[in-house]
Image (cartoon, rainbow, N blue to C red; front, top):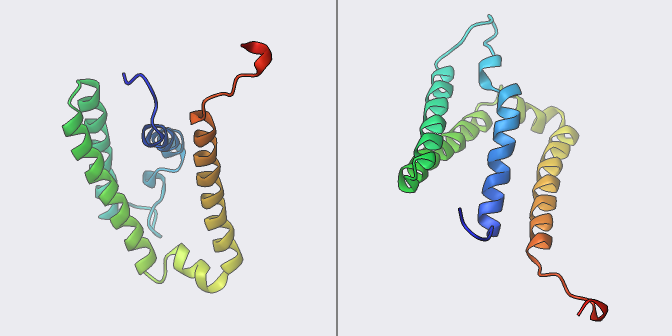
Length: 136
């Protein structure tokens, strides 16, 4: 374990924590097609589950390069899924851009605010405490 937490490691740990917490309740397996079934996109969820699991297994075994490869693959899968979401006009986010700009703005603002607060808090933790003359 590293002796100090760098900003990058702390951000990584926080993002992973969010994914662990919210992934359980906001998983794509709970989102079904209009007829209540699954489609080919759910296969990507299975693949993501496998790559994340392997990423955790490899880092626990001390194989950091393999962990990085699994996590990089998962991340690019996430980016691809996001592009897929915003590229299809019938999906929720593009529809919000047309019909609910205030809601979309609120969503983006909430993401930006929580990310900003996380970074600001981590920067505050990184600062060395200034000792008062009375404590010297």
